[in-house]
Image (cartoon, rainbow, N blue to C red):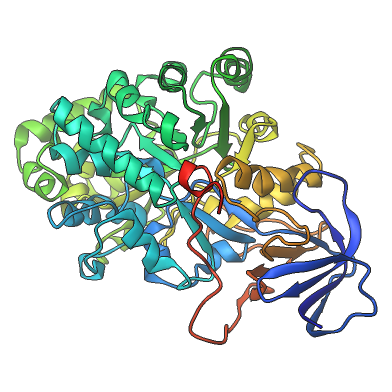
Length: 529
Ligand SMILES: [Zn+2]
């Protein structure tokens, strides 16, 4: 007698091997049987005739840290089939912190990750934070150790060089994070205080991973140019002798996909163990405050707002905006903190400046002041076909980079990455077979980030699953209407519990939700578990 049986589906098991017809028998959270189970009975049976059954998707790059804590169910993610989120990307998150740095991070991340000051519950370590998510959410969560949090804990905010004493603390915190089950360390070189971290500093800090295990996952130093950023990321991992994972790798500006992939194949792969992720869209999304001069933040995020009163800063901002030659008519306001400015959500920056009747530099600087630095942008420029060769590459994993705000003009990747990857990317753009598409979003990610018994369908694995129609699965979110749930996905299951059916969140009985805090086996300490 099974608790749950999925009958008659085509199983795409996550390993990349061809699909096969089989029934799945699940007891509690575990897949107990895969095969012909016609004689068996179950408390509940789901028919999957003409449907594909595959492992639940693993999102290796996202901004769900705050949302996972705030709400037990992120429907925009689960409706796509994501059952696991690897949190704390880009080196910036809500842990580790102390009483001084916690409000700084909540302020800085307001337009990326959503938490408010009154939601801080006193956590400090990564272990504390992850424990708050364990069995409190319908999705599983794993985590990176975010580098900027360590740097600011050790030496405060600002441009100082890390001294030997502080470096010892950073290395100790990495060790501690790996002991807690991190997948590795993340950086975001265009974000707070990491812009001051030199290549040598990162090599010195990250070489701990050689001993502890763990992957270095990086949002590279794009402000130096894509190719220079790639070279630096490879250099860091070659010198530290650790594996490299590049977050949201895309061709940018004049640089074509071939140039990026030749570098990966001919240079990076020869020097380091490398993988990367991307979402299947060319245009990006980020915080408006990332256009400010770095020194605005040198006294921390809470003091930054005060600095915006300086006229000299306003002038520098305008000059820097002009020299970056940003296409302001191709960048949209996705979300603003205050309700007053919500009327401008969805407008381009050019339109916004025109509507408020100011030169662009002044308009955006004033907007940052009004919004306490919290404005999210979406870029409209770029043909998705440019990113397809990256998606197609055998080393590429799926990372949605989803940034969510309710009723906002956010990037459609937050609602559409998974179904676009399994539907249009397979059927219309013929980037890969369905089996390969699934592998790159499940078992390959689980393997890279040390998530044991996840991302695969076999006896003994955990029953994180999705059931969909391979002929119709598709994203519906667009840049004009970005908050649309997908079509073609029938059910999503975490740990043997059905969490979504036909885009409807399901009631879960009992106090404990099925999503677990997953400790990575990348950590030398957790290998045997
Ligand atoms: Zn990033």
